Image 1 (cartoon, one colour):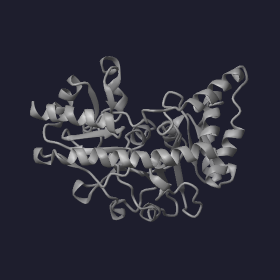
Image 2 (cartoon, rainbow, N blue to C red):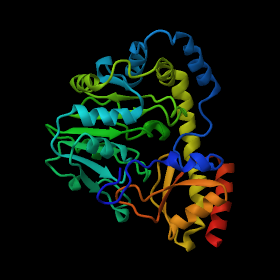
Image 3 (cartoon, rainbow, N blue to C red):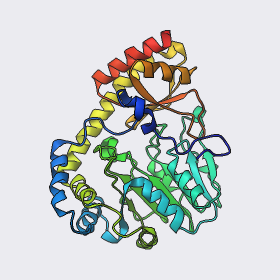
Image 4 (cartoon, rainbow, N blue to C red):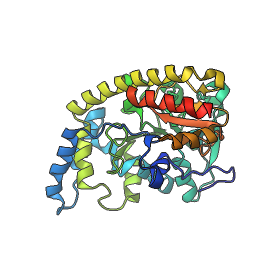
Amino acid sequence: MRTESGHDLRHHGDAEVRDDGRALVDLAVNVRADTPPVWLREHIAASLGGLAAYPDGRAARTAVAARHGLPVERVLLTAGAAEAFVLLARALKVRRPVVVHPQFTEPEAALRDAGHTVGRVLLREEDGFRLDPAAVPEDADLVVIGNPTNPTSVLHPADAIAGLARPGRVLVVDEAFMDAVPGEREALAGRIDVPGLVVLRSLTKTWGLAGLRIGYVLAAPETVEDLQRAQPLWPVSTPALAAAEACVGPRALAEAAHAAHRVAADREHLLAGLARFAPAGLRVAGPAQGPFVLLRLPGASAVRRRLRDLGYAVRRGDTFPGLDGEWLRLAVRDRGTTDGFLRALEQALEH
């Protein structure tokens, strides 16, 4: 879907590693590369014996509710966070939806597909892509923002986002990458004191389950009911339900917390390596707090093509509203992968 501004809202990082990109080292997709762990694969595989029965999401829903200290009526399981954006766009009766950009483009695409005219609030590079609450129109009755935001990797203060809440407004916060932030600081998941709050979570990023499609919505019971009515019957498969229940258990939460600290350390290693390319005009948006970084580089499109020739896939930035062809997004990987990428980047820039 290409908008009047020329941005392809349906382009995502996986496009870089399909077909002729399958053999590339993947820094384009924000899914942890060492997942799913063996114990989770075995747990999902054990659920396959129940495929003859229709999926029963009650146990998984209860587990998610307990993980966030919420009543089960405030939880809706979805086939990934992307389905939740479609449900919100179709089920909610809103007149002036606004999306805060740059961010994941599926929310706007889903709203447009549902016939909505979508307003944009463009955060500015010179402000570090930080949220300016005053830029959000007072009459917006649906506001969508990511935290930490894809692709900028900015972690907005929870109080600043909560301050966007208004009577009669739905405030949608995409926290798909929040479990990659140590301590999940600035999270709004679990809050019931913010009117109109809808929090989306994904279990596909940290656990490497993008092919399984599992996420959830946390919202007021009446909002959950509205969204549920827009879902088809049995929207989440039995293996995905098994994964959801496992990924919110104590063992998984401890493992995710450890992984978040490892990602933070690996990100600092990547940032330190990128700093040496500052004389070439490379600038990193920041401070980065997610499992990816956004950088600006003159001639980025040509550099991206050279990197492909050298065996590395990175995400182009020009499909995000508010960015142009000088932006690239890099997933945070382990130090060995990062060191190889930095050598390739040096070659690409020399060329």
